[in-house]
Length: 262
Ligand code: IPD
Ligand code: CA
Ligand code: CA
Image (tube, rainbow, N blue to C red; front, top):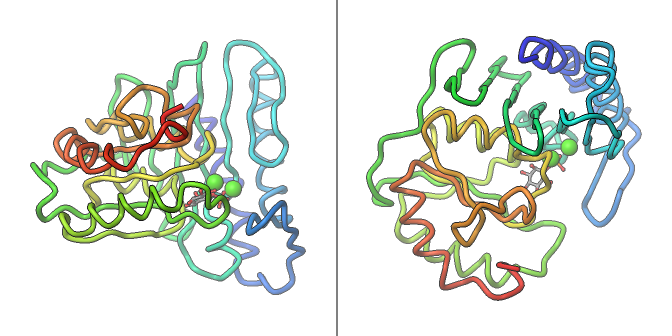
C-alpha cells in the first residue's frame, strides 16, 4: 500500500510542478476567508483518488477538496497540496500528504516535496524514511538551542491571544521559531531532525495525519495541545522529540483555556 501511495504522490506532483511556472494563469477561488483553492489542488486530488480507488475500490477516503467517500475500515486521508498559499505565491514550500488509517488507527504516512524531490514515508512499527534512508527526530535535550516550527493563525483568529502567549514564551526560551507554511512538511522536517519541536492550533486532519506517523516512527511524540491523545480531532497539536515536547508543553499549558482543551 505504501508503494501505491508513493506512486499517487508522484503522479500528483507532476500536475503541481507543471503548474508552478504558470501560476498567473490559474483559476483561483476563495473557499472562505484566506482559504484559497485552485484547479491544481482539485486535479492533483483527483489523480490521487483515481490511483487509490483503482487498486482499493472498497477503501474509504477523506480528502480536503472532495470530502468523505464512504468505504470499509481502511481510510485514506489526503491533502493534495499542503501549502496552497505558498504555491500560489511561487514560494517553493508545499507538499502532497497521504495517510492511511485502519479501524481509526494511523498506520502509514507519505509526504512528498516535489521541489526538493524529498519523499518522506513511514509505516507503523517500521520507522521513518527520507528517500529510503532512515530518519530520526533530533536528540536535543531541552529548549535551549532548539529550533521550533509553527503555524501562525491566518484564517480563524479565535485563539490568537492564546497563540501569541505561547509564541512569546517559546520564542524567548528557544533558538528560534520558523513558519514555513506547510504543516505536512513541518512534521516531515521534525521527523528528519531539522527542527526540534512544532506546535499549531486549528489544523485539519489531512494537514498532519501523514506527518504524525512520520514523527512517531522517527521516535518523536505527537499530542494534542493539552498533552493528550486527541490531536487529530482537535487539530491543536504539539510534536517534538520527547524532551523538547515536554518542555514546550510546560510553556503552552498556562495559555490554554476551556475552549482550547474542549
Ligand atoms: C495549510 C498549511 C499551513 C497551516 C494551515 C493549513 P493548505 O494547509 O498546512 O501550514 O498553517 O493551517 O490549512 O490549506 O495549504 O492545504
Ligand atoms: Ca493543508
Ligand atoms: Ca491543501
